[in-house]
Amino acid sequence: MSPTPAANDSPLSVRGVLILTWVLLAGLTLGGWLVGSTLVGLSILVGGLVANLSFLLLKRDLERILAGPLGAAKLAYFVRYYARLAAIAILLFVLIRQGAVHVYGLLVGLSTVVLAITAASLQAARRVYLNTREA
Image (cartoon, rainbow, N blue to C red; front, side, top):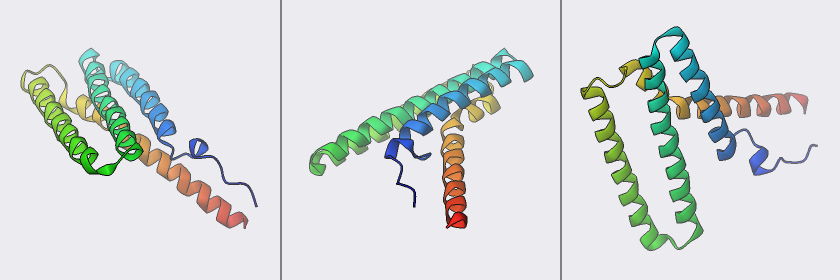
């Protein structure tokens, strides 16, 4: 039987997902510029930055709430979470309303975190499946 990997070695580690989100963002942005236009590439970049930075802030907030007492921290967490969500909604509304971004490019960029989590989950499921077949 093989030893259990450390949490950071797991394909589902937050660190691994973060690395994958930035790699995906770089690849998708480059692909958008090459296949589409400068506006498409820039829109993918903007959407990816919004999604990745929001994911980083969510990670930081969850680490803070889990490190201390939960009572007052929960309220502060939810206030920050909804304030961030409202700020993102306003930012996206303004960008789309003014035509500063390509909507489909923006959606692709916003999907980088979801794509990275999906890819990491599929990789983890594959490892589990292959390990159970070997046993």
